[in-house]
Image (cartoon, rainbow, N blue to C red; front, side, top):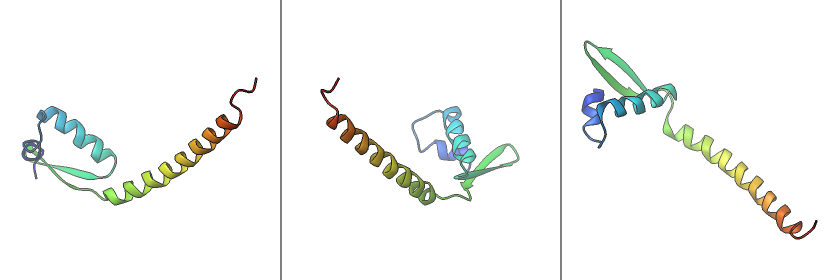
Length: 80
């Protein structure tokens, strides 16, 4: 679909929508192609499932680290 057609489904300006599409394109989630004066958008080589797996992995790691920090702070609470 064209970026203009896609932007009609969201409550944002065309300029704002283009910025979002550019970020998604940089992440590999969408690709765009200019045909005449119209830029068309389609799914990119990366899929959201890949990104979701990556985020879940790092979320788990961060949660473990925060749990360890919480345990440490509880153990050392009140010590000078």
